[in-house]
Image 1 (cartoon, one colour):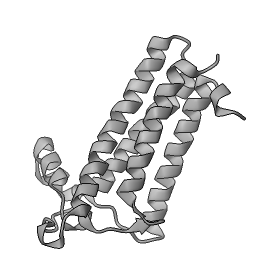
Image 2: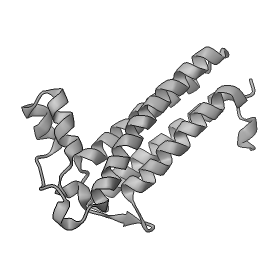
Image 3: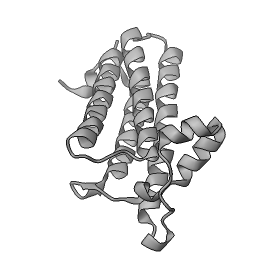
Length: 166
């Protein structure tokens, strides 16, 4: 079971399983640990789902041509970069002193309903007081974990393009 010998299909389906596990933990944290997600958390979940979708489609398709593999890797990377930007912003908000933390704002549902998409994104990325709450898991805040997983999954997707056996 050496991962370096796995096929492209197996590597991408494994990436999909990791994304499903990350979403399962996010739902566990929300409904069992009672950690309500802030808007930035929701954007990170969307990025994980986006990556998971293209891991699944890439794994099911399992193209032989490098160009198609690179397309799937590019789409996974696009979702991962969105996640890295969101998690980085979230970590930055958590690092602010209490006096500089933005006031709590409305939920993401209200922002979607009340504002155009571009304004909603700007307001969500401005952050709010709820985004600055730190709930460490094994000593690392949740956005720190997601940042780590985004990096690992991007590297995993890119390595699968060339180093997969048929």
